[in-house]
Image 1 (tube, rainbow, N blue to C red):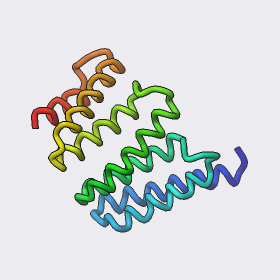
Image 2: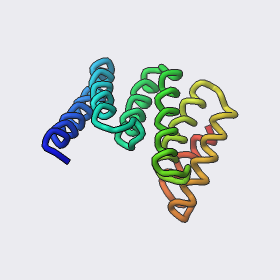
Image 3: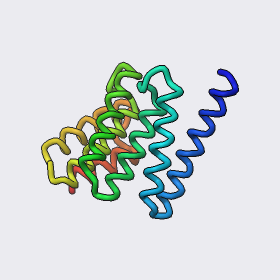
Image 4: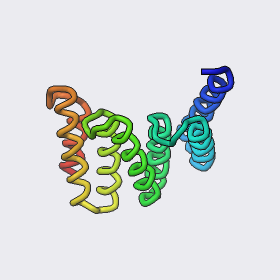
Length: 149
């Protein structure tokens, strides 16, 4: 990597950090602005938008929009992220894929779309149990709670 690439990656990370800071302060408009700027730079730096940094930023945008009740937009970002993770990893059996499925399940549940929510949660559980080799994991417990809800 050259110096320009390193600086761009650092700048993109800083933009994302600013997004987190504003998210934690409750200034969701500013958070969205910085997350989107980070995403734009990540896409420009990459030869394609199919990389885990782009996917992670899409997840951050999904979380932000979900928190604001903008569920359709959140689903769009989560779905894009899921597609990228599956392409990058070549499988659905990865922790990043599982977490994104869980996020999709949460949004579907909040929209009272219970059939898709159950589908997402069950796939999350299958992947997580296989990944960690046990049902005794905090992520499994949280999703079992979501299934109960």
